[in-house]
Image 1 (cartoon, rainbow, N blue to C red):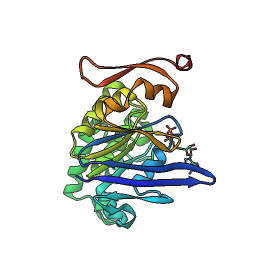
Image 2: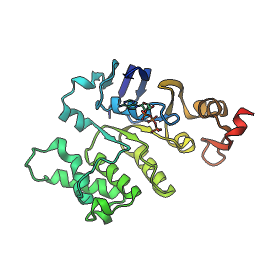
Image 3: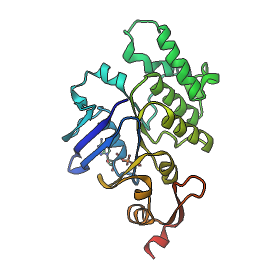
Image 4: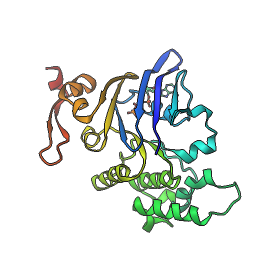
Length: 260
Ligand SMILES: Nc1ncnc2c1ncn2[C@@H]1O[C@H](COP(=O)(O)OP(=O)(O)OP(=O)(O)O)[C@@H](O)[C@H]1O
């Protein structure tokens, strides 16, 4: 397992500063949640963390090594990203889509090795896609596509996985399934989420972005508060620890009540 850390990340597009002095650490084996309203900069930050985009300032390090200095193929063996925009464009089968995760381990014309098959099989199994392995990508529901994307990332056998709202198409059972799976795997996880209650339940630590800056960071019970929900989202909420799990649970009272 690896530690992913970012220090003083700044990213500007035109005259807009999208990310401003963002520093964070995703410790080995932990789940770090990235929260924040629409347009706060979550996806931009994740792409920089995954080495897909260079920041204007600051550096992302994987186990102390700047990601920009790690050869692509080597980085892809250590770090996988599941982006919001679905990346499979051709009409491949579920199994072939998951097998794309083995690309960093294979030569261009190599057949899948026994190890590749094993990794794909396991990834399809834990994501509940084994029974759908022969179906075509285009025939899948949004949730099935999302689970296939996760299977592709897990087949990559990374140490770190970066996910951009991976549960937004999933029903509640598969949301819990995916989050439990991610928490149980020997992985360092950075995950952008909108559901504050699920984030509070599954993340070891949480960072909240607002206008490209970190406005809160820490343990879920310290971060998910009624004051934060009011100040960052403009929503009135009551936050109480769940009697069943101990995690903070927000009950939303409404938008207008926040400004009352
Ligand atoms: N390539 C780009 N060029 C210009 N502006 C961009 C670019 N990418 C993102 N932005 C802007 O940066 C801001 C942050 O976008 P980003 O997608 O990172 O936010 P987000 O927190 O992931 O939002 P959401 O919750 O809606 O997915 C937005 O205002 C967006 O329009």
